[in-house]
Image 1 (cartoon, helix red, strand yellow):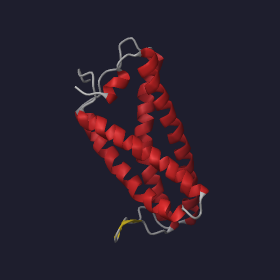
Image 2 (cartoon, rainbow, N blue to C red):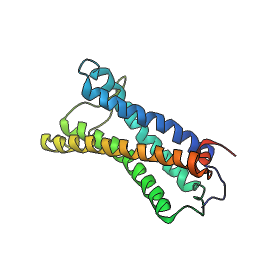
Image 3 (cartoon, rainbow, N blue to C red):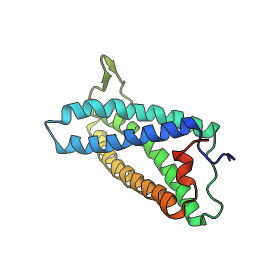
Length: 176
């Protein structure tokens, strides 16, 4: 465990960049479902941002393994400490799962997966309409779970910043 009271600079940059990207993706996803006229450009935005999130979470995980986060406050109740660790695990799992399930869904649907220009992603699962239906449903429910987890994470961050004032929020917001 790190002895620093702050996450390192790459961790902080990745955290805030990915936070903006994930929130954007959640609202883009809602827009894709809600608007037929806006759907084409939202889909064109959704695919590359999703893949960027997948690549950035790999970088983020490597950084986290090389530079462990600062410890939680010693006086944090055990239940809250466990909840914090489990919610971070869930967030990482969802940051990996959402893009992979989306990519698999498009592959199973037989759709081309353009990123930008002439760059296309290859299919990662075989064309299978039944699998497409399952993955589409999974992508939707994982998005709801991600949205709920992000809200919970935000609420916990504000609880630490405004109620406990224990330095947890500042460890991600500030620097050494």
